[in-house]
Image (cartoon, rainbow, N blue to C red; front, side, top):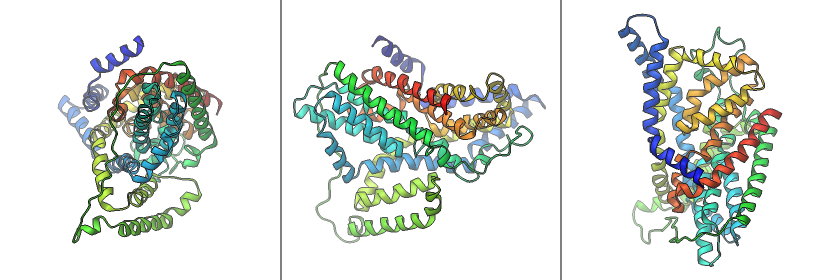
Length: 458
């Protein structure tokens, strides 16, 4: 437990807020970019760098990407606040008769939900862990509540390899790879860039689904054994409210806001448009961010039953995106600097010089895990690291799907170390970071070994 205290103190003392980190990384990128550009006067070099920065910040294609990622988080959160999801959570809760079964139920169900949507899984896991604690408290069942809380966070260890993963979803979009590699391709690449990489080659590939299943079973068994070996904890929880109270009387046009029929009709209309637009890529197992968000929007409206509850859930969910949303332009600006200044070639050449086709995915895995500690946003990380990974993979002949998933695995695994994404869970469960870190670190080691093994075998 002393080791986890050291880690917690390190994050508290030496890592500022994620936004401040993004600002510091921007300053560092500007400084390094200045060192890499030698043409012209000092004033000219500074002006050129600032131009690269501005172009990156307001890159239209990447701004669309940022909005897509925000919708994935918001709509996932909105879904979990619906009444049907509340009933599912309460149904699962009743089976948590001791620490082991409660932890297994929370961990496995959270990972499965997070594989579909990381925003949904993050809040689902937090509320489910909280409700497990409330159930144990009400029925006087001794449980290790921190272990149950940590189990509700484990979905963030599998999200980037899932259906809402930023990198594999974006490369499935026609034209995204070319947009991301603008200014990088040409004489530096011997292989032409693909227009897109279907999710059937990444997320829905047999090897990725196999690794996810192995992680699901292994972590489930691990938390079961930990539940058997760890002592129960003392805690007190008030009943968590899903905030789904109905207004007793409505009149006039306000009735439309509370109309179940109108909400269902509009939701079904969205589903119809979804099928018309996406039936072909669905058959090809090629999922894109727009497709996922369209499906979740229709589902959220139908599950909430009226526009009023839907919009209240949106308002509750959107606060969690504020800090992430404002960081995206900064990361895009960094990408503009490292691409325009030529730093990307130096970094990529270094990666190639110390790697081969076998070790590059391993190197990518570890570097992505390290970057995630400082850039705790899969989308922001893809914007910065994606061009480096793609260029190195093309030069060494590493299959692009494997290189992309190596980045995804490395990014997601250190979420178990980086407490940034745990903040919503800690707020809901009323636990402290130091209480869940001992367990999430174990999850990180075990999951990391599985992903590394997968990168070596497949």
